Image (cartoon, rainbow, N blue to C red; front, top):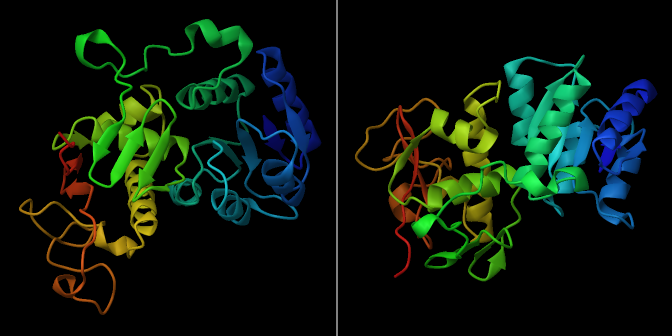
Length: 286
């Protein structure tokens, strides 16, 4: 685990609490050094705890460069507790956040939750790592078989997603979001349901974080298919128009291009059901 924090006292406290529960921790004091450790270091971290306001390479630039190459889970430490500040972090791909000043025990709990979703836990906790969060398939067995939706393949065991045989690099929560939706095609999930399933019952924050992750997920699927991300970011047909957060079904989200004129190479995998939530729009292959 890598802690990127320029305040030596905070870095020391975080390290002590995490080592106490069995994690191996490295600390660095600026963003540039942290980015090097994450991308070029001899030991790739399982998770990064990142101060958002760093010397060298600050949080936004750090995340942009990290996400271009790695899907390592990231927990953001921030002194800014406003909703828009937190949403900005999620837009850059962070998995969770803790607002300073914070309880070290809360941070440890969030680390365990994020790493459990990423299937990485300290030695002390391996026996109970699943915490009941493993999805269950038919007959009570974990639903781990690969899912196939035409050119889109989702493997829950390897946690890999391929579209047109190209790997799509997703964050932990982006992958979990895709998996939850894809395992129940056509079912509409409310934002609260998705928060509970993916962020956990004890999540304290805004439900708009779901919208941000859906938007990021759509953009990555579109980019992986070589398409304009705007082609997927629309409500489900027949459920109405005018959603303030998304373009209507009859509008094109890319300025100057008519929706009917653009060739669509792949379906809109995730649809917005206005005023309710989201659904996976494509049936699984037979």
